[in-house]
Amino acid sequence: MDYDIHNKKWSSSVVKYGKWYLISSILTKGLSILLLPIYTRYLPPHEYGILQTLGSVSAFLPFILSLSLDSAFGRYFHEDKYNKQALATLYSTVYWFVVGYAIVMLVIAFATSALWMEDLITVPVWPYAYLTFIPVLFSQLGNLGRTFMQSALETQKSTIVDVISTLINAVISVFLLVFCDLGVISRLLGIAAGSLFMFGFYHLYFVHNGILIKTFSFSCLKKCLAYSIPLLPAMMGMWISTLSDRLIIAKYSSMSSVGLYSLAFQFGQILYLVGDAITRVIGPLVMSGLVSDKEATLNKVRNSSFLILVAMLFSNLVLFVFSDDVVSLFATKQYAGAAIFIPIFGFNYVLGMQQRFPTTFISYKNKTWIISMGCVLMALLNLGLNLVFVPIYGYGISAWASVAANLFYVAWSFAWGQYLERVNYKVKQSLKVTVFFFMLVAVYYYLSHIVMNVYYFYVLKICFVMLSIIVFTALYDKNLLYKVVKR
Image (cartoon, rainbow, N blue to C red):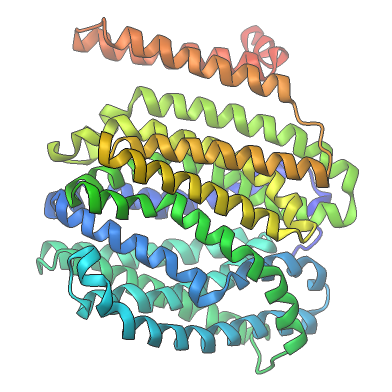
């Protein structure tokens, strides 16, 4: 494995490794979007809302079952990567602890689920609770293996595993949904099968390569828990900010509203595919570079942050222009109301990708309590806004509440990140491109309401996107635009 990843040119590393993350994202999250016509045909908004609410519950369980120890492994991987025995001890200690601890927590979860599950989600404990909870353990153990691969930038292998897992999930889900008419159960069984495959592959792979061995180090566990436990409030806060809104909408609105809201959230993840493929490569590069070449790494972070901001804002603008078309193409008419929320969720990912830079510095300094406190404050803000305004204005206000909470968290992260490690970010240029983004949004919104002819409307969309390419290229680098025009 290539452990000296920071020594290479970042742009070439992003292209070399990021393409596999992009392929993985397209073939995993993208496949879920491509299958939405089937899901929305066989699952009405009410059942789709139940599925997404169960997904919100399962998204909370990883913090309980693994104590975020995969994050600790990713942090200390770069310190032990040149010593195979130390690396094997680190991986095995985390792995065996999660197995034992998670089983105990699952037993407790099954014993208590009857007290809250039927009232909150209106589904029986059996088989819904078991099909929702058990696959999370397999996913967490598989995710530990994926963290290893990503830290070593073995992106091709992790991509292949992710794609096969997703295909198993999709094939089983669609077959049971279409031919067996199992409804929500079909998706839960598909998710369980995909998680089981990923767990099985990584378990056998690391046993074969001598990384997963029969050893356990209490000192290693103590070090990892000291890093991960302060992160738990952050993870829980992130869950509250991104997923608890579905539970509030289910309580104060309806499961159909949860279905529309969740569909918009899924389409908003199109933007996540763009940013995640880049930042997942840059994260290990920053961690590795801070250990070996700090000054060069800080300069690269400065340039990368601005480039990603420009790319993400442009991508969200395109998503805004074509949001109606995306919904009409991939979902039935029952879901048409979801289109308006897609670019709002997309803007959250614009903010989220920028927030990853200061968070990396905070993690490197082992100040994980800062991340946790910021996430908790963000969660409380988001939760408060939802509880106050959703009963008054309906489920739509929840999307804007998430933007307000994310803005706070980005400001918090950058303030602390700059305090711990000063980076000369391109602040003026970033503000300028953001202002132009909102100006273009306002212009398109106005034009879309005065052009009534369908043919001219699509001509407007194409011309607007082409104009936006010129504007964003000029804002990023005028010389680059000059070279393109000259050619």
